[in-house]
Length: 274
Image (cartoon, rainbow, N blue to C red; front, side):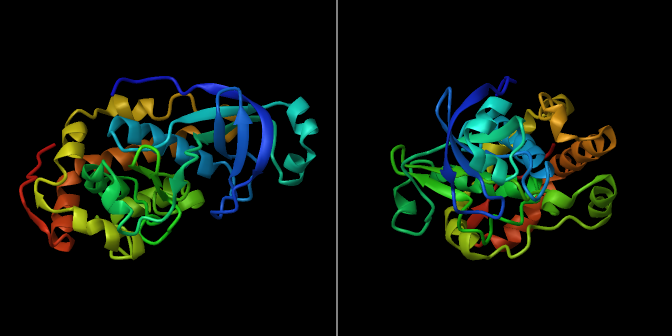
């Protein structure tokens, strides 16, 4: 996918809290559409917005099915207009929003999952999780959606990625580098247990591997472009996260070997040289 600019939209109306997820996202009507917004001022800090932003752009490069994202601008006038936002700690400035899928269903149990039209994206989502070290997807029942209208499976909620969620920094990422590469924890947890039966036949990861072949370090740099200064990512941490992602992409063959051991319906293929 070609590089693009993430659009920015203004808040029109605060609707409500979404009532799911530890990051307490908020539903907002904007000048474009309705967005689920993770906001500056949340109790976990701006790292979760950075995580969402970087993972969104990388997901788009790898053709992972994910709702469109935007930066949501909230000025002091809107903050005063909706005092409940102040009570939640929302600050003025730019926040991370994912377009609401109004007909979405968080349950991925059969038979609903059998109806989705993009089952071939399931192996891609699983391999993507290994790249971004997303321990949250295996068990969390809220970060995969089925859009009933389009009959597509969507990957959402990448706030707690890079193994450490909101707690990563240059030092901690280097510690992860020193460990042997491994799959995400609880690999056979609730969600993956359902998804793994779709990792089958020959070359199930071919779709995402074709995208990975075209990834460059310039693409990783692009994933950090447009990050709002207000989110306070310093240069050393930014460089460390870029290196973290590039290292994992360069070693995708090792992840495939590890996946092969756990995906018992995978018949063969997907030998990969980066």
